[in-house]
Image 1 (cartoon, rainbow, N blue to C red):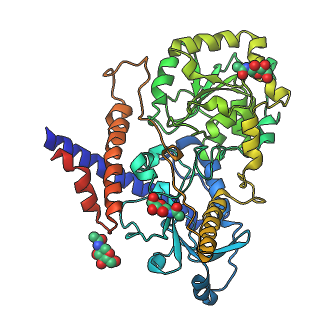
Image 2 (image 1 turned 180 degrees about the vertical axis):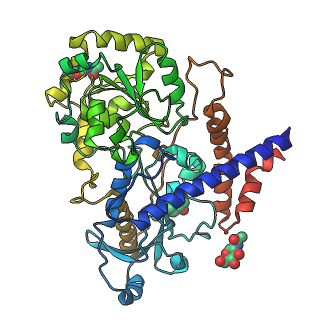
Image 3 (image 1 turned 135 degrees about the horizontal axis):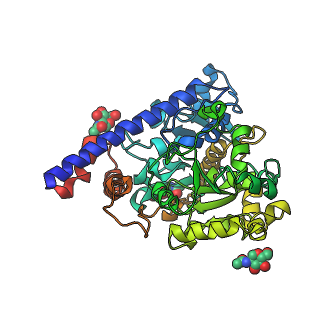
Length: 479
Ligand SMILES: *[C@@H]1O[C@H](CO)[C@@H](O)[C@H](O)[C@H]1NC(C)=O
Ligand SMILES: *[C@@H]1O[C@H](CO)[C@@H](O)[C@H](O)[C@H]1NC(C)=O
Ligand SMILES: *[C@@H]1O[C@H](CO)[C@@H](O)[C@H](O)[C@H]1NC(C)=O
């Protein structure tokens, strides 16, 4: 039994690694290879609507300037603290970055690991790899983690033993040092805008040919198990599904190319609907994507499943229908049918937009106070801001040291990145059909806890280690 279990785990680990490697390679190739046009690559990650995100990533390569020539770089690296990206993310071999009064040298070149000026290692969550970590870690080596993506991309970071290895964080959690919770929202005016909004009378007449609800996903069977829910929902109410998951309706020919997903034309199709199923691929506090903001932009009511505390971020207290308020998809269907035939009740969900009245102060403040922009080349992007946050903190401690003061301590807390174990919906009875949740996501979440323990143990030993040592430790208890 044990042997078989172990073999299966190894097999799934290798599959995982292969897929992960592919993803990272794709991403890196993309990010390094193109600067002007970002092409929609794959439905591998979050399928349907990744374009926005890729465009967003593209900006980081636009607004950075190489301040100095190659020859001077070597000298500069000797004068300024070095912040070493332990990831190919930025593609920058060496750049002096000005962060307010402070200047730091940013690089991805690992040859700087042992340089006496190296003060911080910057990690990117999605490609964070146990292989070849920068160990031994010196006292003055801060570790900083940037992780904005879905937790499905690297579970082992989401546990106390690993997240607390870091000093500085930028994650989707409001608790992190640089919260990226609103990373998919360009600005308040975008959700206030009436540009795409279709009048209710028109929507009512379109209902002859359209379902009340629309669903567009091409990343099927993610940890949130959204497809199980939507499948069940479909037996009580009509849903038009344009994506690969639960597909039952085709997009017009000219929109079939995924690159056109962000097209105004695509928006106009969605905007004709009364409700959009906005289900995240994973359920974590503050993990909120364009799935929520898009319907709000378009003037369609989101039927939301995702961050449990989403009401903290909604524009008003009547702007979305929350799936968790209903005990069964049947009840939700019932409620939507009622709204579908009651114009006044339906319009109550759009009143905030028509009036331009966003009552949520937390949301307004977050957008106003954030120092980075989304798809906005006139503002810094969040990677620049993250780099500068670490640079300023490193400098603060250098100055304290010069004055003979003890350094200011920074440590990531467990709530900077934490997600509960993926769960099946209560209504769904197990064993009815194969689900990726039971077969893959839950076991992989459970295993990631062991990985987190093992990683912690090896990092605390403070000597470099091989992948083999790591996996031996992970599977130790089972043999
Ligand atoms: C919702 O907003 C209205 C208007 O701002 C307010 O009167 C009401 O108390 C709010 N309800 C909740 C549950 O917050
Ligand atoms: C960074 O974190 C490590 C590990 O928790 C800790 O030993 C070190 O003191 C921290 N550095 C700072 C500047 O807080
Ligand atoms: C640890 O690092 C040293 C020096 O870079 C290298 O020679 C050695 O092979 C590494 N050991 C492991 C286990 O990776």
